[in-house]
Length: 248
Image 1 (cartoon, rainbow, N blue to C red):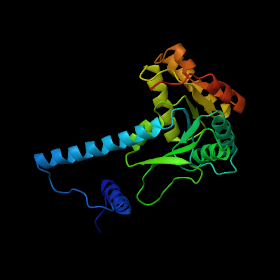
Image 2 (cartoon, rainbow, N blue to C red; image 1 turned 180 degrees about the vertical axis):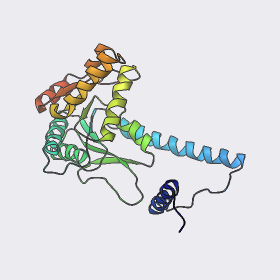
Image 3 (cartoon, rainbow, N blue to C red; image 1 turned 135 degrees about the vertical axis):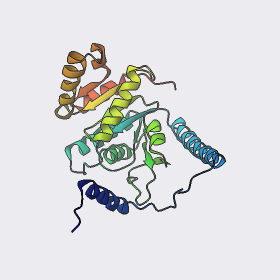
């Protein structure tokens, strides 16, 4: 009997994995000519441009906003879902629109609170188009949808008066460090970056302080002041009340 090598086993496993994600549309499998590549590039650039224009037009009609980030896995009974709902309600009562990714978990909690407040702030969703499911939660008053994840991310992180981060996974971390980097490098104005829940965020802050700042000196001491860890709704609202309106 022929012995199957480890590399063959891995290859066969990867082939099986590929069968799970068979694309629903025909992909280009033949080599493209140079002119075909140029046409494909132009079409994609045009689609991306239309998405950005659509997103910026959406934001222009909602000039005062606070963006919520956090886990999509927290259900309605979770303590942080309840916190997102409570803070979303209070932020909307201040007259700020609450912007989320429009999905479940923290996003739904923030939208639900804003929607239930009856204004003057609105509940907004910046949604992503997926081939097999629609993730827009039922508490969104107004929304805009995107095909490209990166275009959606730009709109989510553009021109808010504050960014509020609840506990989350890799996506939340990605969004947190992107905004942190943009502020640190002065690509965007200094904006309140609010981290809710000391139990979740303080271990990360310890790593930033002891490893990045003290051991490797890859950040400046003052970079630790770019964000604020809080535990109460009142702290969040006070920070937002004192945040200057952005003029972008």
